[in-house]
Amino acid sequence: MKPFSWSIQTDLDAPAMANGEADGKQHSDRGVRRPSGLFFYLALLYTVWALVFCHHFSTSVQSGNAAAASPTVLQLKPSAFFRRDPCTGRYVYMHDLPPRFNSDLARGCRRISGSPDVCKDVTNDGFGPPLTGGSLPERGAYDTDQYMLGMIFHARMRRHECLTSDPAAAAAVYVPFYAGLDAAMHLDNADLAVRDALSRDLVDWLAQRPEWRAMGGRDHFLVSGRGTWDFLRRPDADGWGNALMTYPAIRNATFLTTEASPWHGHDFAVPFPSHFHPSSDADVAGWQDRMRRAQRGLLWCFAGGPRGGDMGTVRAQIIEQCGRSSRCSLLGKSAVTKPGHFASGHAMRLLEGAEFCMQPRGDGYTRKSTFDSILAGCIPVFFHPVSAYLQYTWHLPRDYRTYSVFIPHGDVGRNGSIEEVLSRIPSEKVARMREQVIRLIPTVMYRDPAAKGVTFKDAVDVALEHVIHRVAKRRRAAAEGREHVDSVDGGDSWKYDLLDDGEKKIGPHEFDQYVYMHLAADLVG
Image (cartoon, rainbow, N blue to C red):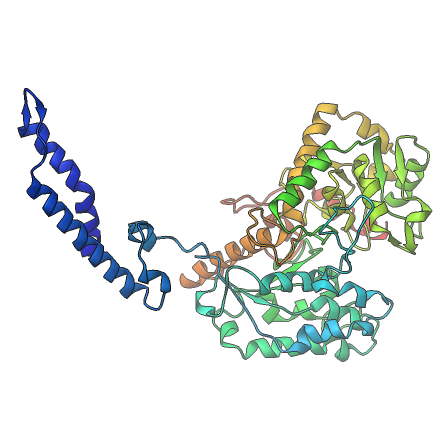
């Protein structure tokens, strides 16, 4: 490399040296004398020599590359040989799992009890069937089921620009196991051994792999389309779900779910998939502009239905208060496709027409509707911090006041007026919050995996950045002979996930009263 570097530098310096000689020795009353013919001859000879040398150098470095046979000016630039690999530090290795861990589960969709539409949901790599009409985008809209995230993530990783076949070069290792589909097939099975069979099989398979043994799985990550709660049953105990996340080997890995537990250190929540999966920057920008121009005639709304139980629950209070208000609207009966399910177009039309969208608990603490609301530019209103603030710390701002409203569920349970709280928020602040929500749209959606040339970061990009950052910290700690711990099991683990970079100590938190004192009551309501 030294001769090449020297020749380029000499070529750049030659004119300056000639001019310096003219300035110092060749001035006369008639101005600067022209260089002699010998100078031009030597300059020409030097240029020819440099081109021949650079052509030979380029050809030897890029042998087999057809472009090297016809060097251009751009090929001779030093920067061409020192251009940084855009995937440096971002390479991901993906295990080639036996099909029983993923594709066979998708093909066996009819085995999922109580969900006859699952075979529809697994089409288009988990996006489901295309949607048209209503308030959804003209292209890129799909009837996406909230449980299909495992498939969606896998489809994206198969086409990821930084996928590598060399595990030694990888910053993280992806395990494409459809844990959510496996769990759904056996949730009602009384035979615990059957429920746990495929998860245990996966652990045994990984344990035999050199990629896993290199760091004991600490550089691996898995993705599930269901919440953490479906994978926490102890192998020797009755109860809900399977035991995947309780196995010591899996506890070394990073587990991405749509709802994480605040009390476990290795699971992290990522957004539920919504209905818009754009394929270009223009698609995203156009949708954001549309949400900025949307006419929002309602102050608030709720896209959901009633649940059985105590009428004092937050959900019941929302429905009751909204029904009495002229500034609120619920989904009409025409939007209901079957119990608990609503037509996507109807729901999006409602969300786009309101300033604030209510987000009480769903089946767990979280709801897919949270991300439907953000997609619609509607400011989410939460009633418990575990519904979002302790969950999506990678994708949503740490300062929840910039994009959402928090009304303690206890206040609503005591018949506090939701509308009164929302009416007191100044219009200028509402505008700022809505703009922040609209800016969040790209980071909480899952783009078309076949998209090319996009520059926006979607939910997968954001999640991968944080997984790789977490693995890098663990790798540095291992090199120093220690175990990196960024969160702990137990009641305080959620606080570690809320620490800013560089912070290490936890202390009292504003959400303590909701996470600890009201946990039992909230599980009921």
